[in-house]
Image 1 (tube, rainbow, N blue to C red):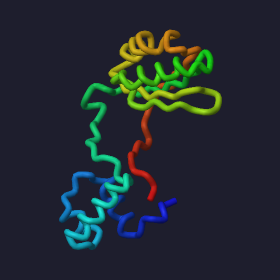
Image 2: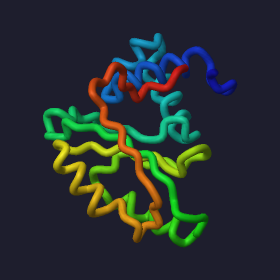
Image 3: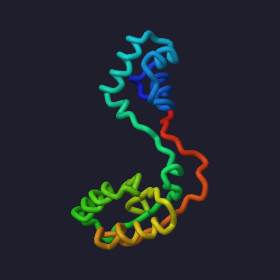
Image 4: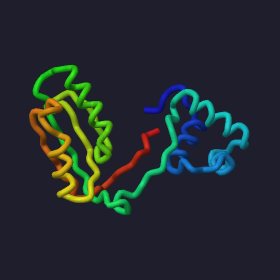
Length: 155
């Protein structure tokens, strides 16, 4: 559901920028039917409000030898807050971990790793995902084929 503070033009701006964050202001203005100055003003408001968080480049993992995607579901040994904070700190430092989420449910966390191959995954798992971080168990799920992978939010 679209945020109530967004009107149709804001939504069109956001959709266009999600598809191509490199659009020049004049191209964006033309696409959404605004003058250059009005479009620039609206984008600035969307940025200042935090709706547009940042701009980034999406890289092709296969071109960078990150051909292998693995999701890891894990549980902690106990509810030790200090260990949990240490885990969070460490996950932010591991380049192969591209997503880390703490969860409610059967597992305490889920990680997404982008690695070259099974050997690199195994090395990362043994080096980083250890009992020293308070991890009790892990379940790995290897991606065979990606059907859909988007960064676009539904607007």
